[in-house]
Amino acid sequence: MDKIIIEGGNSLSGKVTISGAKNAVLPIMAASILGNGESIITRVPDLRDTRTMIRLLEIIGSVCRFSDGKLTIDSASVDNPEAPYELVKTMRASFYVMGPLLAKFGEVRVSLPGGCAWGPRPVDFHLRGFEKLGAEIILESGYIIAKANNLKGAEISFDFPSVGATGNILMAAVLAEGKTIIRNAAKEPEIVQLCEFLNLMGADISGIGSSNIIVEGVESLESAKIDIIPDRIEAGTFLIAGALLGEITLENVNKNHLLSVVLKLKDTGSEIVESGNSLTILPSDIINPVDIQTAVYPGFPTDLQAQWVAMMSIAKGSSVITDNVYNDRFSHIPELNRLGAKIKVDHNSAWIKGVVSLKGAQVMSTDIRASAALIIGGLVADGITEVQRVYHIDRGYEKIEEKFSAIGAKIYRESA
Ligand code: EPU
Image 1 (cartoon, rainbow, N blue to C red):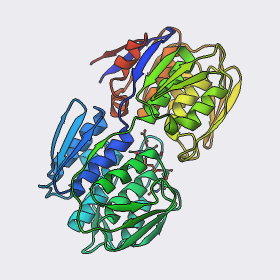
Image 2: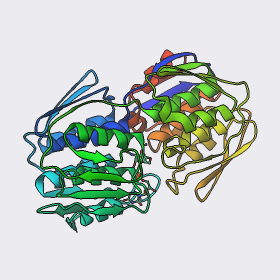
Image 3: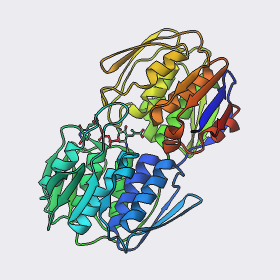
């Protein structure tokens, strides 16, 4: 298994180009199943998760071509509405094929996702939504089978504005008969782009970006072309690294997607300068402690919680970081403590006492964002940090060690 080795303590400076957003491209790839022809998606990040979704689409029967960030998906020959355990267990977002396959075939078999490193992560909102649209749901040998001869529009209200459930229900509702209203829908930019892609395919979705999304079902959809939005979580990760280690300019960002993050970074003492689609962070000598409460968009994203905890571990004072989206997303904390951080977890909050410096150690990553936090910790720490199980980071960050090396970090990959 590959490791990432970091020689910490070097300052960073330079430019980083932000990749297309993982969490935007994955549902859009699933949506391409609905089209009768070849969809073209550009600025596709080359990630383990994108590759997993390509494999899944090929199993289903789509024909995919991927090179230089351009992905074409021809779904005319889709004939196998099934997502096997082997793929769903490595990437929960595989569950996104359920909505489009149900809408197109009237029947789908998808492995039930298991737990993940930070808790159960259920799919009950998705399933209740499909039932409201008229599907029959059966659980058999670890697989969910959904059947519906004719999906019918319905009013669906989520207890929590789930990103995945909003996307999955949208992809079923676009071909349902009549009107669907999704209340308490997710407003994340990735869901907005999914709606835009579906409308380009011929869907009739309104209320995009609001809590109430309205879908008027249509008979069929065509293929479409789309350019993926910049990854706001990758951008936030590099901004946090810059706040700690030097002046970095991010290119290809959408600053409107980063407003809550930029405001909080300014509170830590950094300056942030905007110019067109780039952002430059100018760090201050001292990191002020800043509390965070994660929330759904436009709040502070849970996907930057781990990286923020890493930054606060060397702030001048104490801070409390509360995750309101997931109850137990703290697997990075024992590992950051191995680097010398002083962090305690109580329920869904991390209590952090800033220390003067971190010291390199061997650590293990447990998920995508935890890995990013450990890389940030390692870049700041004195001495050598070895991050194991880096396949997690390859799921969600394109060429991370190349991007950090290009701005002055001493970071290498060691293949076993
Ligand atoms: N939830 C339920 N029931 C459901 C669905 C969700 O209880 O049926 C709960 C979850 O357990 C969680 C909360 O609702 O506590 C929010 O989950 P959500 O469904 O919004 O998350 P998701 O769609 O599974 C996506 C991202 C995650 C990101 C979350 C929250 C993708 C592929 N994944 O997951 O990204 O953390 O939204 O913003 O878009 C990552 O990129 O590292 C990552 C984990």
